[in-house]
Image (cartoon, rainbow, N blue to C red; front, side, top):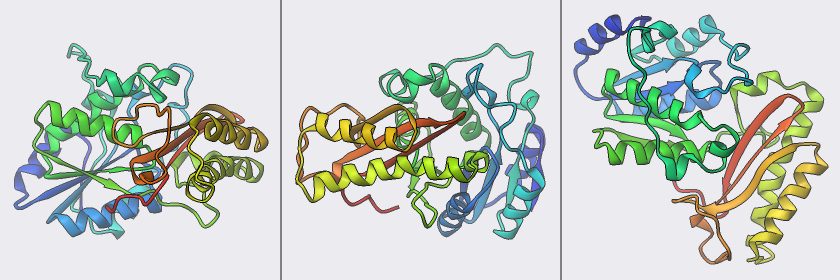
Length: 287
């Protein structure tokens, strides 16, 4: 397994690869969900490249960029154990040289709602780094998790509109046995905070039960109940909402016969730690 820390080294290694390539973009602090991405990627492509980069452009001024976990030696060991072809782990100066004028890329219809309201520059930063990675690595496939369904939709729209020759592969949410969605930020959670964080999963599962079992179709009642669940778990909610799974548009009424086209999204803080989660309200699409 090769490791590239500079753009020029990455380009040299990339030029030597023959056959198909899948990209697994990460910010490091790898866990079992990232491993699942690598394994799916290996089933598709001859070569798998993992990027490990904590992208400053998608963090706000009061967010956790400085303290975001960066266990690079452990991450490289994980990648080596999964037999990926290579890892790209650049410094900020490689991704954003000071000599370059900054460019802004965005998908405003999708990027200005939900996370975009809470984190106004977040998706512009995501789009910028994703385009850089896709341009540098030129993969045939790139994996993105369904847990962050809004990011998934933003990236899919980005590559479709800009005719980027890559297929975005959605990967289902991986959860611990208690239901908490795997996240690098889970490392921040103490025992009490972890129990509180389960409120996100509980809000989503109870919303799904309201629709599947009780046949509840009133969006306001479902979303109100989601907020109540979060409050009972001491989660300070940013949003708890039911949306169209494709467009993320709000729904005035729910067709309980079409729950596979509806997704629930939640985000909130447990103390100082911000968590997000999402869940299809019907059968989640296959990978």
